[in-house]
Image 1: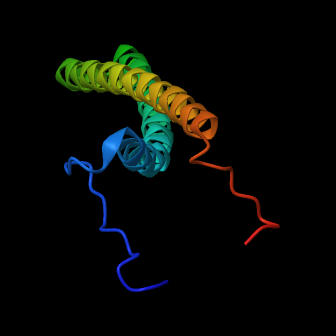
Image 2: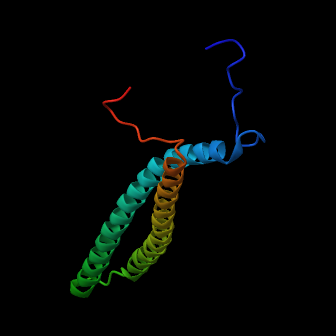
Image 3: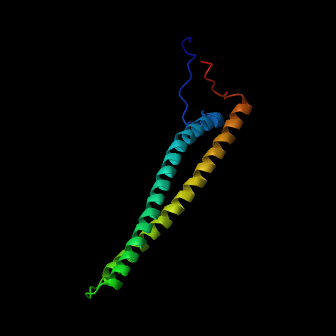
Length: 138
């Protein structure tokens, strides 16, 4: 390029960035956030599955302790342990509900990011500024 033909770098805050520069920056941010949101959603889903499995194990253990307590010849008080297990189960259920709500918010955020990305891409393509990248073209 000839001297003086280089354009200054545009930032979202600069007045010369204009709507097109801001759209490019916004799309870049959306593209950056989307994989992180998807990865977080997968991790939350995995934790929720673990929580369900843990809750089932706690239920089984509490049932087994009650059964053992009923069949014991010696008076062994297992009720405090059963109560502790049920309390732990209640906390697992609470954590699972929190995770479920967070995952739903993540899904809505991911959906909104995808929708906004598609909208901005359509706007940029319509303005002729943005062309889709093709692996066959450099």
